[in-house]
Length: 471
Image 1 (cartoon, rainbow, N blue to C red):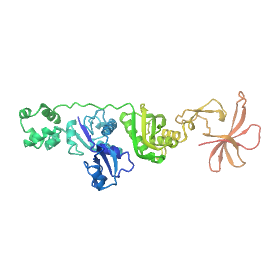
Image 2 (cartoon, one colour; image 1 turned 45 degrees about the vertical axis):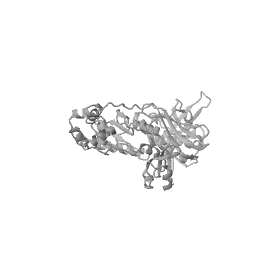
Image 3 (cartoon, rainbow, N blue to C red; image 1 turned 90 degrees about the vertical axis):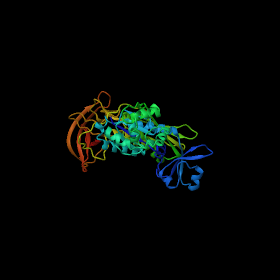
Image 4 (cartoon, rainbow, N blue to C red; image 1 turned 135 degrees about the vertical axis):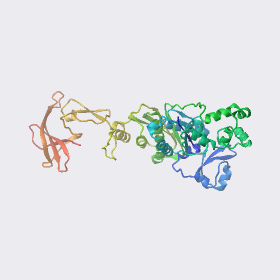
């Protein structure tokens, strides 16, 4: 087997930075009591200003005041680790969260699907970078060895047991995962690396240390299996972004909205499902939240499409009070069937698939403004269709050509304005409902080449009446 360990060295800091539009701003996370606030973590711009973890807030403000502060919340670390596990679940069904700020996933069975390890590694790194999380990544034959090697390496891939023993043999005892008192005792004995520890008789180690020391050593070398608890994805998605300022405009809400929909798409890919309905909650101070439901006709999980749909719904809502936070909740997560595509897609690059166009129009114009057409057994054009739920467009009946756009009221055509291409086609119908018609229809063409459908009532003279246009 082969395992990958992904370590997130600044998970709490990245979780805050990814929710801010200006990721290059100096930022510090604070902890401690109200009497003595301490810098728990700092990003690179803050470190360039001379700020360091462990400094008091008073000392940091004496050095510089041009930095932002956020509260260090240990509960958020667990929350984001669960989110990352949901993301990793798309690559492996064996994902473990047994170590803090770390993901362990088995990938031996995934390499056949996602390609050889260099290609798979590049994909993992690209997606984590897009999500906004810094990381270190190591592959090894067993999970504990991968976790230990990630303490010292990034990008290392150990192929087999002999190579693993060579890499671990050079590791200092302080980085092998033993308790601090065990590592200190080994150092005082003059044992600096794992190779030196393994050179000792096993019985001597068993007499000097507890049994857990040898068990850890055997597990590290792959001679004893490691029992891990595997992650199970939740049945819903619930994520919130707190804004560090009051927002009254739609434009300022687009950044958190894009981040929320991208995270939703990553969660859906991990569970191999789609979303058909989700709700945006705009949180206000001192008044109830504003809820914006977003419904789709079919399950989707494309991040750009989810963002456009949510954006269209959001822009239809008048923000009545300052917004302090944005929350996205999705509970309707049906199975997702990827759209069937041709091997050679002849669709122009800038055109949209039918499903995306349909949902974008519904989001922009409203649910009632977009509908499908159903055919009715009636020859009269104005009575031959009825509104139906939206369905993918299909071809007309064989041998029948009808315009796709009917005018609300027929318009008279001036003499010489069009040229008759085909006709007449006589339609006589409607005697049973009092709207009897007797018309001769013609296929006509304008000087610009546009084709229309025009008629003249039987037995009457005068101009042709245009009733519809062909696409």
